[in-house]
Length: 302
Image 1: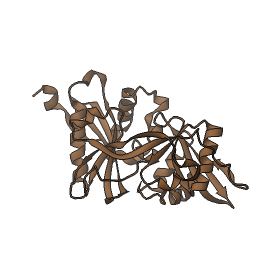
Image 2: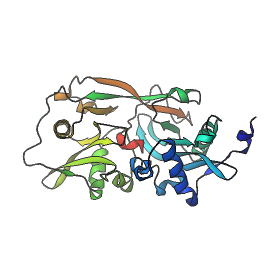
Image 3: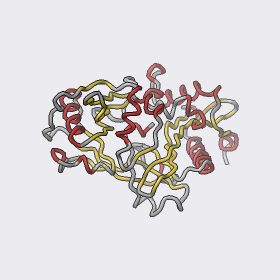
Image 4: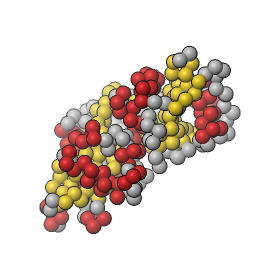
């Protein structure tokens, strides 16, 4: 066993570690401090999630870090306690020694001890995690918006930038989706910051009738990644996103079949796995990952 493996101390981050953890994560992902990943992932990397930040320490120095945001999630297997993992980072001088793998395994045990039923992560390199017990979970598509002819916005409707005060109304629309995460108003409000995402609400008679979110960091360029409301309202917002915002694609998680009607019927697109996942409590994830239906929306990347 290597010396590094013996001396790596794994623990939850403390308040005094917070800025150092952000700096380590930003440096690992090549992000400048003024454009911190905290803006893209304001819930997972926010101070309010300090108990979900984990570090590996060697000789008093933080050498690796990761984040976990734990929420209840409505799925086809019922409500599952779900740990969303991400923002794994290792200092350059300490890479190639298995530190991140050890930290992830330790985090998963902590999540299980805390009551999580399963863990999910979003990655463009899934092969890295196959040997760590992760497998594809859920199905989704990126639908191509441009070939369709979308309806105009309803007469008399008012379209405006969402504000933090709209969080409750947007959550009400989000809750109409059959598969979803249990979000708090506070968590959603931070995502409504224009620095995080372009979110528009459609008002009718002073009431928020629909919403659409377009683009989020580097995760969803020119992509409608969240929406809610009736299909007719949402289709109008998709059309507006194409014409005014240059959107080219829309995220279609499981449970969005009601939106694939009218001008969206037969929408072409690219199928893909929703995430990589690892079951922590098999008795809770009935039928296994192959049969599980769930939806990971844009803001669920945390």
